[in-house]
Image (cartoon, rainbow, N blue to C red):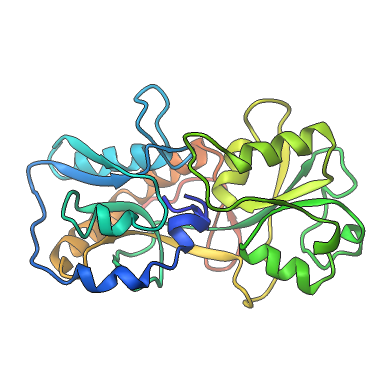
Length: 287
């Protein structure tokens, strides 16, 4: 997925929030969806979203298996490409694959399915920190604190507006995850005390806060308003011409929502409903 964030950023900021509209014109071609194999476009090194390591799959790999199961148990075949500028052009538009498992709703570059989860940027701090009860960036307790933030993401804009950016520690947004992991570096800095806390796209925050040391507190930022948005609906992405394929995927999402939720919860992804309430148990729907 794209980190809003492959997070956000998510990527999820990455592909999830990426602005690749300049490539959109290439998406208007004939429907050539392969029905004998599920051909997925994915980043080979973007845990917790996707990975080319069968021993360490991401949650998008797990969701791809659910989709393939509903399509009659067909095999999953990946086209691997780093999720940055050129990803959609070199994969989905090139017809090397037929589906991006994680894509932010509202980006017109692809045709979005219905969203299968909604998440938010989150504050990550030590559980025993005096910041563990903070629920919004305007909280006075954050004044003068050294917070980690990924440059160019929505929280950086909010922090700048609130006067928090002058003491912040920036981390890179666009990196090749095969070699660098700003998220993991930020988590290490929180645990070591180098920074007082950090703000990450929800899936990155939830997953890495439970890896590599004592669990950290993950607080979705659900009170920040809409400018810029801090919550995003995540869909699957297909080519603009593949409306029938989109409808098939919508049916699968509806039928298997509970199983998709469980995958997300297993990866500690903070998922929230439309009323901004955090979902802690899988929703069930049938088809």
